[in-house]
Length: 476
Image (cartoon, rainbow, N blue to C red; front, side, top):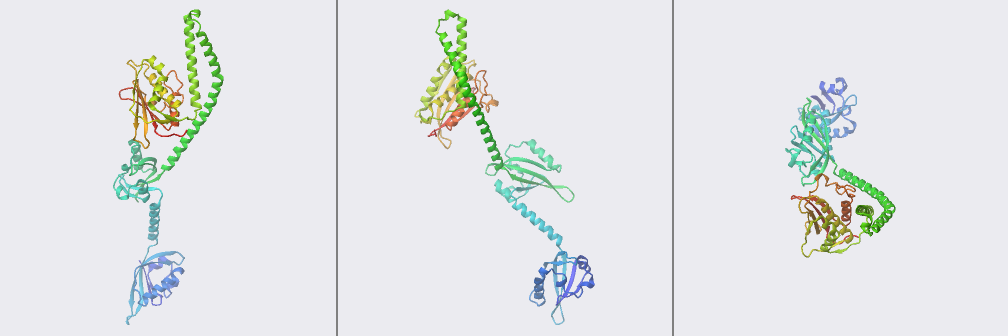
């Protein structure tokens, strides 16, 4: 401890070796000198003089204070002083003796801790500190702002409360192996807030060691990247839409070329075959008649392909009107009547009374339901039981907007679950014959009507195509 005694004039009458060693002065250089001129920094000198005078004059009592002193070499140290007074025989204050301790390093350490604490408290990243078993000991305000959990609600608990179930147990085990071995781990979590919302965390977890190098805690710094992920997904979706638009543009050019270069030759071939068909079959033989019919069927099939290409590549604008759902579905059934009869399929209809009308393009919606009925027929083409198609319409009032749902179900083999996401991709087909444009055309038309379609396999077998159309006007 350092010690110094000042007389009533502020002159140094005593100082110990500890103070001399810390400040670099020799005893003969300080005894009899003014304390304030020699040891007090110029900026503090006036305030120190005033405080000393108040004590010497009896107007203030000495108390523990912290003040700066300067060394012989200009270094400034922070001292904590405790002072006592000595009195003369007449009762007057004669000297002030102060015992001091250099607290410069301690103050610097506390200042660093204060700055670090403020930085953590004010950080825009979430900060979590756990013990070596993963129990939370500290979270900063940003953590509570992001997750909705207060510090009191999570202290003592483990981060399992934020799990969304998307990160596997294997990934968590790998995380723990990494940090227990003293290494940093970095990754992204899809976590759950207190209110049930999901958010994305870019997380860095580091071990905290004591003076012996032993791991005592783990520090997790988490950046909320939810908005970044959302924007990235939005960019990807826009890029996909752009690629889709570019594909459709190229397809439109190709379809125009096909329509121009193939339709006329096909029409000529078809007309020729039809003229031949008017001749008596006996005139040219049974085999030739069969080949003629096969050729005519193939021409018609090619015309269907061309029509699908043109419909998908160059969608027309809607011509909406108010439509009776039952009449619309009956019209679609009539369109496929020939195929229904050839397959021997039994079709049943279930419509509740007083269904509201829908606003849509009759021709396009008829094409939607005709395509779905044709798909159902294809699905039950090779079943060893009586093929059946059930068409049902019903009201849906669960969502924000009332809607009508039309189900077209068959008793075929059902859908392979692995193909469900691909069925609406252009040119994807599971059939030997087919363009792979039927369902994409259906979805395109329903998108124009702000509708939806869902395909699912029934528990009892077969597939159900559910079309949902909103009730209310649509933009033309």
